[in-house]
Amino acid sequence: MNNNLLGLICAVIYIVFVFITSKLIKSKEKEVTRKYIHIMLSNIWFISMSFFSNFLVAALLPMVFVLINAISYKYNIIKVMERENKSEGYGTIYYAISLTILSLVTFYIDKPIIALPGILIMGYGDGLAGVIGKTIKSKEYMNGKKTIAGSITMFIVSFLVTTIIFMYMGVTALLIKAFIIALISTIIEAISIKGLDNITVPLLITLIVANMI
Figure 1 (spheres, rainbow, N blue to C red):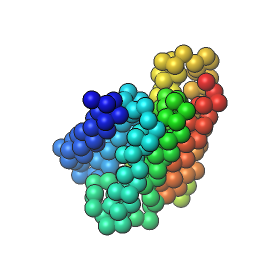
Figure 2 (cartoon, helix red, strand yellow):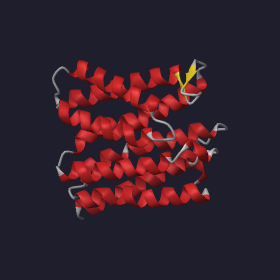
Figure 3 (cartoon, rainbow, N blue to C red):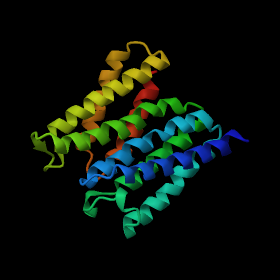
């Protein structure tokens, strides 16, 4: 079987798995379930890197989900993904857009690994920041949209994610570079409102990583 086709099959199976398990762990706090999906879907980049060789095929599923997420946002079809307050932005749509752009660009130049830090920071960093920021009481800022606890979580997770990936890539001065990436990621996430961090974090961090390695 062609690797690109096998990759699409594995990606679809994984997406179905994420949504099924999100039902099983469904929390009274809807945000926890939503963030679980947010975090787990970032792992799909590992599937992409393992199977796809064609940049158009790599971008196919994210492009489809731009449309699916837009329809879901408007008609509240996939309720587990949507915020109760729609005025908080188009985060799910931005998420799919960022994956589409990164798939097209990084697979075209045959360097998809440069997008891995930004995507996992968007997934794990932003996802855990949202959960912990609401769980641990701390000072709020940005009109109550962000918390100190959430931003600290974002920094720590971003630093750990980047350090591990840079170690695998054999990047020199990795701790300094990981610190810089974590700091910039935290700042970007803090100032991005209405779900824009789902597109600003992965795209800008990928650009920075491409110039670091």
